[in-house]
Length: 192
Image (cartoon, rainbow, N blue to C red; front, side, top):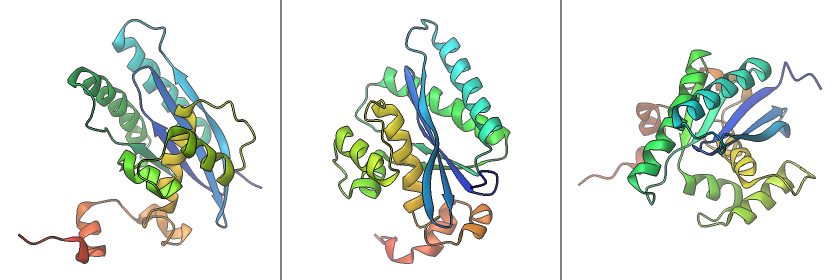
């Protein structure tokens, strides 16, 4: 299989301590893992140094693997303000890295990611990891949840209306925009 010709989705589970990443390949609707792991900056005390390393490492991943899109998990609102701020910074530098390379960015809510992979919006991290291992035939049960969550985020993009319904050749030209979403889903507009 030629990795240069397959469609690649970079999934990111952003975090200020550990950022999970997974690069999923799609070739004729066959899914496979190209790379999966974590950027662990937990031991670095300076928060700005942490986000610098996250940004640099994501750029290296993008430069090496040349993904077509970035799929990133959006924040969930149960966190305290300080945690949300730090998470937002980590998320921001990842998005900035993708935009520097001209890569389209798609953001998915945590609940949507869980539903797309397990069918359950309240699935545990263990359930998500189990489905990821099954879908992508990953034999390594010792992968951190941050890495399997990143794979789930990449798969969420694959399973979404913006990728699985649209032929692979057209994916590059389709943008995740509110206007496009509204046009594609008029039944989801609620009139008050």
